Length: 246
Ligand code: FPP
Image (cartoon, rainbow, N blue to C red; front, side, top):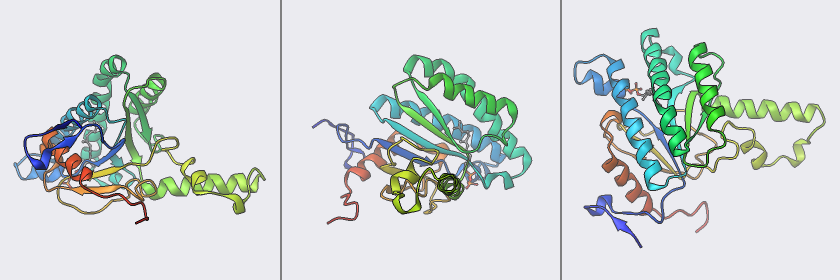
C-alpha cells in the first residue's frame, strides 16, 4: 500500500484517493484585508492557488475536481470586485488552454453562463467544447452557480417533460434529478473542502453533496498548499463512510 507523507497528518494512501474533490475557494477577501491589500489582490492569489491545486490533483490522479468560482449571489459584490473575478477567470482560461491540450484536461462549466460578459462566456464555451473529448482529469468550474438554482432548473425541466407526456411523476427517480443537473454524468463529490474557517455549504452542490465528507480548515484559500490538500486527503481516508448503513 503506497503511503507517503512526512507526518501522520499528511500520510496519504494514493491507491485510495477520492474520485471527486470539490472545493469552496473561500477567504480571498479576508486574506487580502489582513495584509492591507484590496480584496481583488486576494482573488488574484486565489487564482494562482487554484492553478497549483488543480495541477496537483491531476498529477496524483484525482478524476474530478469541482471549484466554486462565482455564485449566483456573488453579483451582489461591488462591480469592481465582480469585474476583477471575471478578468481572472478569463486570464486563467487563456493561460490554461495549452496545458489543457497537453494534459488532456476536460473543462466543464456548471452554471448559467448567459449573464456573463460576452468575451468570457464565449471563451468558457469554447474551452468546454474543445476539451469535451479529453480523457484526463475533469475540472468543473462553478460559475454563476447556485445549488438551489440548479435543483429548481431540474425540477422545471422534469415538470415540462411531464406536461409534454414524456414522463410520469410516479416513476421519477433520484437519478432523473441527477441527470438534469449541471453535473449530469459526474459522480457525486467524495470530499468537499472549505478553507478559511467557515463551516457551511453556501449553496454549493446541495444535491450532490448528500454523502460527501466535509473537511474544513482555518487556512485561507490563498495560503492553501499541496500540504494542506494532503492533510484533507489523510483526514478523508481516516473517515468511515457508511452512506446511511452501519
Ligand atoms: C471567495 O472568497 C472567493 C470567491 C467568491 C472568488 C473565487 C475566485 C477566484 C479564486 C478567482 C478565479 C477563479 C479561477 C477558477 C481561476 P471571498 O471573497 O468570499 O473571501 P472572504 O470570505 O474572505 O471575503
